[in-house]
Image 1: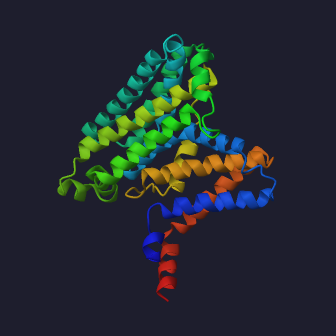
Image 2: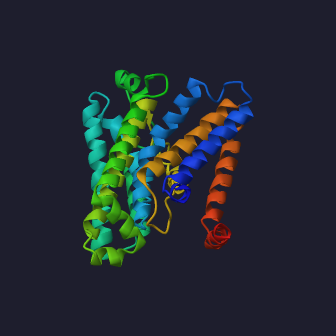
Image 3: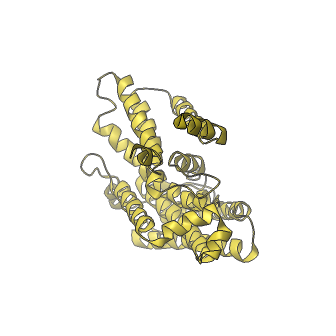
Length: 320
């Protein structure tokens, strides 16, 4: 029983989150800063910014692909939201989400039809989207003038959440259910483990790859549009630094660059860990670079533990 729990896909991301939480509480020494509602709200706001991007990127990594374009889609969608959604948020959302889905679909079709590397194709998508964002904004910040919409997405709900974070939690929960109860989850893991074997087994590899890239574009666009509403401004260069934290969250959540591992809830736990570190260290008054050092140390430890030599030694020790 203990071995099965230890090998569960969510065991490691949950253990990392709990360990970080306990460590922050111990460092806080009972002052209550880490356990304050404001710290929890800050953690979930970080989650709202990065969860959907990490989810889309994580699904691509599960099938042994990588979507660099999420940063460009995130930026372009935010600029579209500011440009078209000031008077009508629904119009801005429609334009942003349509752009994200179209970019993802086109990239998926190019990868499948031409047999190209996803890194090269999505790098082109990244540069194209960022260039379009600069053209749209004329290299300046665009204000989002709908104050009512901004207040709606940033208002605290139950002290911990905002509308943004609740939407992200709902999307993650829906994807986790679909991943867990349908054959799509098994087929995605099979694609990442051995694509030829998945094709032989009858998995719709081509359709899944295109759908995952389209979904990745959708997630990045939705996240970028909501962030623009929350900040009431958008800029081509100010919304594009999302790939490093998204990739870090996916790796913390149990996703491997080699593909074939990971779960949507694990990715969500990885994003929550990033949010917890940032909010908790801010509550403790630590300088910003401490967050980078702590995250780097955790990623290094995870990378070392994932190494084949460590795995062999742990199995030998367990057998002994």
